[in-house]
Length: 129
Image (cartoon, rainbow, N blue to C red):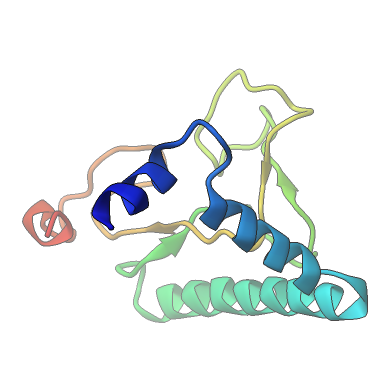
């Protein structure tokens, strides 16, 4: 019934759906198969990042950009350091902030990496829909 389904998702006990998906993910990551899955995901994300950069250079700068260090030749988490300018943060902890290579953050045309607005970009009304 509806009440039973509702109560299953509002209990103070662990959410059964989350527990089940966590167990499934843990089983998928066992052994070499899990390593291949993760490595494949990282490789595809890096190829995607590089393709976005290539398309941006071909478009004379008016294209999407990727929020990442200038050079991404390694398949590791990239540190956000206070002496780097690519991330836009100041006074950050150099030892605990990293960019996950699988998570790709796209910057839309119209806003610069430092947060300033360009003269031309994607209208906010389109992005907000």
